[in-house]
Image (cartoon, rainbow, N blue to C red; front, side, top):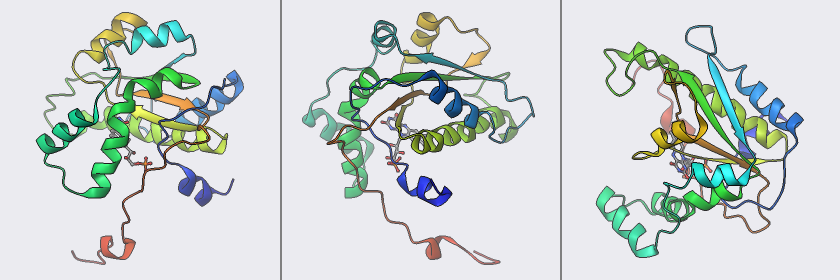
Length: 208
Ligand SMILES: Cc1cc2nc3c(=O)[nH]c(=O)nc-3n(C[C@H](O)[C@H](O)[C@H](O)COP(=O)(O)O)c2cc1C
């Protein structure tokens, strides 16, 4: 696929078909991630790739399995989200958090070595490791598209990250920024409207 076609085609997909994924494909996707820019030249990232559904179910057991439409409406009111496009995105996403991970071809838990407290950085550079792995993740999302797959992600909430550490056994100095779901889009997968942004309005030439 052409580079800009991959960019256009990458959309978050939360409805996956029942499909497997070959190790060679996973290796190319993770390999693309490992080519991303990195703050300290070390790319000290690891990836736990989980295809065993029993492990996936245990890993995601702290994520609510069902969220009703009324609960989603209450969350949107609480967050004071009034943009319709944004509301529609959350209405699709919130109830599918458990299912998208349970039904993906594989769940990948990316890990970065975090030397300082990411929740209490002294300065911006203390967030460099965290920022770098998001570059890695976008490379992976784009590579998944080029491989005919799609992706979704979830930020761990509450004790989901601590639970993931317990289930998967990764070392204390490694931090999990998110869960990644990779799978084949279902035939009827929802495609939530992407908020239209005018490039011209966002570019400020020379001065704001
Ligand atoms: C930092 C970050 C956090 C996100 N957190 C979640 C999440 O917890 N659950 C989820 O389903 N999607 C999550 N997303 C995906 C966004 O919802 C999605 O990218 C957005 O709605 C735009 O849709 P698109 O990816 O199809 O363009 C996150 C994306 C980013 C970059």
